[in-house]
Length: 356
Image (cartoon, rainbow, N blue to C red; front, side, top):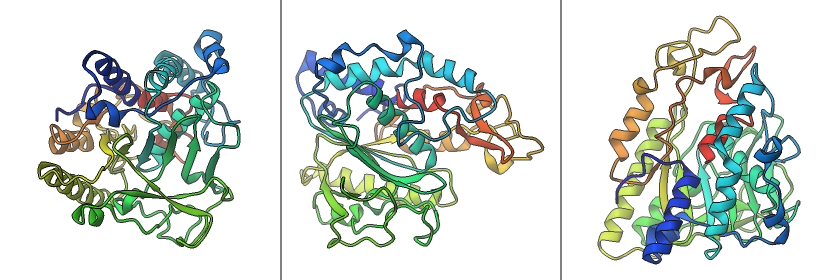
């Protein structure tokens, strides 16, 4: 399958939906979409960009770093220019026949993308209701979250299927992600379906230290061909292991599908790694020589070793998302600050372009 290297996530969904109308349902279109059957309230809602209001604010339970950083007005203008609300509204309405699930599996930068999608959907009236979510909040932020739409769901599941890890406390810290029982690589080898370990909607909005299949706060959610799982290998020191695990999973799934042995797995995609703006030609943290609270204003994205490695590894192997975005000129839109965070972004802002 040809890699999607020129589109962001929701733009890809919309393009595939239009193709489906012209050529009928294809496996790719079915897997890249999840539905939203909008009601009168959603149809009549005025888009945020028309009123020049942010797509979301701190009242959304998933929103962090709202207005945080040295240049929040610039970040907000960048957010407006994405027209994310238009893309989400059109994409979900156009794909309102799959009741599908989207799972985002990645590090804290992926969390910002999840928040952008989920919070903008909330603003536009897509949530089932204001309480239809679970989020494992800690004093730092959160890992593991889900939101139920009127039709469909969106998950942030960093360790989905046991494929990736990020060294967030190794299970001992409240900031750590869930360590469930699912092993998608083994399930692939056994030609069994994929299930997602997740919290129930009745679970408290806090991390539960130990996973147990007998604990009513947890459940396994079956993933179907109409569902879409988007991975990113992260920028932590666990990246090499994550990359190896992800590659092994892709190879196993490809072999099974060649033999006609796919039991009904979801579609797997890969989202590009983040562009950092620490001091240094490429902006990567390993080159950082931080002397102030300001991030580098520019970085040469063409020299980003993470992006170049991903293009080499995955082009033609898995649908790829977000590689058309050149974020090299936008270092001012990071959080920055005394602890010099030149990885995460002020929101609303760049994560909205990623989400689009």
